Structures are given as structure tokens and as C-alpha cells.
Length: 426
Ligand SMILES: *Cc1c(COP(=O)(O)O)cnc(C)c1O
Image 1 (cartoon, rainbow, N blue to C red):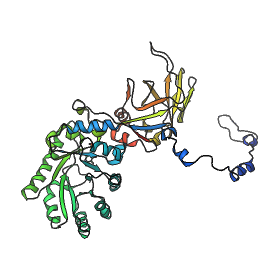
Image 2: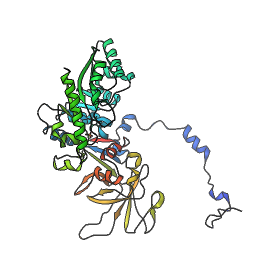
Image 3: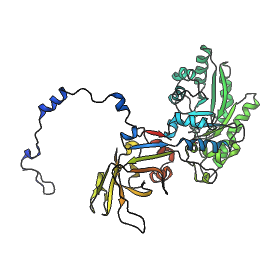
Image 4: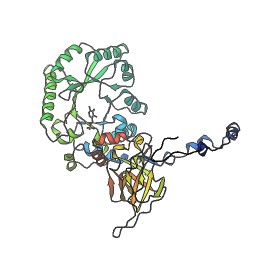
């Protein structure tokens, strides 16, 4: 006697589930394939955005605009570093680096050795600062590709200098100073000790000193000013000891906009380069344009009768008088699952609610078929373009909105749009 599930006793005859298939003919098909009907050039000619109907567009004019807007706020002589780590916050490191260098940036910042190498291999010759100290084993790479390391341990400094010396090279570096964030760096009050431990090495060349702020984007400025004071203290101590600190820099996007007094010799522009405001306060200070937008085309449309569910869990229930549309974007593409039911898509210039749980590769949205006033009813069709992030007509969905809905910061959302979505540059 079979167990019952909600009174259902199962099929009496297992054969109900069986179907026959012709195993032999399948093998025959594999064994007697026709010669290939398509050549490689034909296959390669299918554009990326026609292989899967979802993609990211990057507006390089926005990158140029944001760079020059920041640049013209700096006093003459203050250098601008474009921070293009994490593939330029998901926007494409090489393209963004070039666009930014062409509009006022003169220095690049990266987080990893390989990010630096990628820029060099793309023919970029401007100075590149690695914003952390790499493993000692990576020293030949940074010397060969002329990637400037941030240094804060004597062990690294000596190994770096010795390798450089053995190859007849100089060992330039920026000293990372910990002024209070407690992430990396020599403590601000131990900088002279570090210099004494390392300065005997003839190949070492201090090209700059920097620190990083923990609270530059926060309303309260007490901690910011404390860090700034300690950093200046360290720089002065070097000065007094006859050591030239070189390029003195500390400001990230928030600091460079909010506290021009700490711009010093260079500023490090990250999030604002991509058009995001580091905090609400900067909105009235500068006109920034978001460079990234995310697009898709509808892959399926259906009427879902009232009270039927949609997507995993069936948590969303159709209110009737809606069309449910599917787009090929999911959390594997960076559309965070936590945003399920908390973001809008734009179709024909109108916002439509994303509904149901966001799946790995796809998700659904709702088109309301009731008419309001004079607005024409939407008539979604397979192939229609949908904006997931960006502007269409008068409607806009921003990464800011998404970050707020997902309880995170814009950085994480922007970087999250994965490389499964091709980047198209305009
Ligand atoms: C990432 C980073 C920056 C850029 O910060 P934003 O807030 O994105 O402008 C600057 N400096 C260092 C050391 C960083 O790691």
C-alpha cells in the first residue's frame, strides 16, 4: 500500500511515467553527422547582445564628464588618480582608464597586480599605483610591468629593493600610512621608525605617501579630521627629518569633494568617476552622470490568471489583469536575489514592478493592464527592450535605489553585474 500524500495514493501503474524513445536512432544521428554547416566567421559574427538578450552599456562620455567635473575643482597642480580597481567598479578597467586619462586623470589606481598588468598589456603607459602591498613573490611582476607598490612592511621594502638592485632598476614606492582606519599601513606615529629601518637601501625611492579615510562620507567629521591631522603630522615629521615625502595624497571621492583642504598633491577618484554620489551631501556640489545601464529584452510574455503564483516559492500571486514578462537576467548576472519584489524595470518609459523571486538566470516583471487616465495600456511583446538600471523616457531606476533596497552601497551593486552580461561601450 503506497503512502498517501494529501490523499493522493500515486499511480497504480508505474508504466504511466514511461515513454519510449528510439535509442538507436539517437546514436545514429551522432555517428553520421553532416559536415559542419557554419564556419567560424559566421558564428563569431553573431553579436553578443543577440546571443542572450541581456547586456550592460557603459557610457564613456559620462566617465569623461565626471573626470573633468572633478578635475576642474582641483587646484592647479593637484593630480587626479582614476581608481580603476575591480575592473573599474564593474565598468571595464581598460576602457575607463583610457577615457579618464584622456580627460584629466594622470595616475591610475588598482587593487591587484593582475589588474595593473591588464592595463599595461593594453598599452597604457601612465603611472599605476597598487593600493596595497603585494606578496613578495610578485615583486618581479611589478618591476617588469612598472606597477608602483604601496609599502608598509620593512620585509617587503628590503626584498623589493634587493630584487630591483640586482636587475639594475630603481624601487619606487608609496608609503601607506595608517592614520586610524586600521586596514593597512604603518601607524602614523611610527613612520620615522620605518624610514630608519629601510632608508639605508640605495634602490628604494619614496615617490609618495598616502592614507585612507574611514569616514569621509559620514555626516560627522570628527574622525575624519583626526585622521587628517595624524597624516599631516607624519608628513611633517618626515619633512623635519629632511625626507621628501613626494606625492602626498589621502582623499577618496567623498573627501575630495567635501574637504578640499586635504586635496594635497593628488586625489584618488573612485565611485564618483562612475557617476555615483558617495553621500547625499555631494549631490548639490557636483553634477555626476552614471555611466552604467543594464538592459534586457523580453523572452516570454503570458497572462497569469488571478491568484496563480509566479517563480520559485510562488510567493507572488497574480492580481489578474496583468501580463507577466520574463527577462534573461538573474542573480548569477548580479541582479541580487534580495531585490526580489523590490525593484522596478522600465518598459516603454513606464516603471513596472519586478515580481516573484529572482532566479539564477531569469526573472519576471508585471505589466499592469488596467488603464489609468489617458495613459495607453502597455502591450509587451517578446523582444521588447527593458531597462533594468538606467533611464528610459521620464522613468529612471538607479543603482542607488537598488543599493538602498538591498541594504548595501552602490559599489557592491555596480561591481555585482557580472561578466556574463557583455559590456557595450557607447
Ligand atoms: C577604493 C579606494 C579609493 C577610491 O574610493 P572611492 O570612495 O570609491 O572614491 C581610494 N583610495 C583607496 C586606498 C582605495 O582603496
